[in-house]
Image (tube, rainbow, N blue to C red; front, side):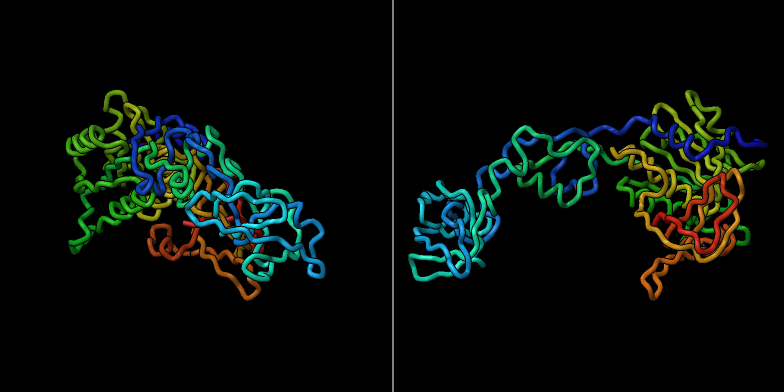
Length: 411
């Protein structure tokens, strides 16, 4: 293999990745659903709340009875009872009367508003004064005001957070159908790669990629299985890839995708039946020698051998693909939060390549976010460990200037 088969832009690669089918769905408890993506639209099985209730501690009243009330001329109301939490009140609010009610309490019949306790004075056991008027339905959450029965609650593809779990629990929903977790085979290749427990001999390196890529996969909510290191042997590599494709949803390899006589991955993949090479080479730096392929609807990703390049390609393309397979939209770039700041140093870039620059973020004395490039050779893994995010330099840009406002994707 003496050249890249097809170098594509990052946008073109994302377009091609968007054609993968999503994974199947499974029914799980809402208590296990954090971070998962819904596989169907959810409709409300009931009104929320199921009855009108108070949003404050105070007194249930008829709003007209408080008209014109003030501190100098308060409204005098007769206290006729109280609402107990968790019980339906059997008392009715009549004109000129009030009923004590706690936050969340069932609004009694006849009441159309609630006066906050802060605007009342208890004169004795049977009378209160109201020093501030309330309007109709003030401090009341009406039946179905939060969600109506049959109304959409959550759409398919929504990532479930604690607040979604709380909403589902409030509606009595105990189980939800979500896209299942991706099962990912992580395979390191190369005669020079050894397990991390070993002391490398001259010319050997520890398998940093296998562990870091597996960690990235798990951080995306997927399941990662690290395979034994595969040597530079075509038969062994083919057997490993074919076996992984039988049992896993996605196969991630590292190494073997750059130009060179000892690179076997493209040769092995190209001989597999029903294989489609989506990209062999992406117009980015670092990470250009990445390879993406598809077989029977399953993705095969071969990351560069350099740990920095492997992780950056993993952050920029593999992580969004994993989230997409598990139900999320296919988002461009790393999935971390994006922050804005001011670049502290000028930098050059190559026209035609989308460049991902490792940066460190520092807030200065004025509270402004400074973006500091992390300098070092591209293969130095420590530069990525010191970085807080990635700054994307577009392919049509020759560079960025110090003082320029930029956006950074946190990693």
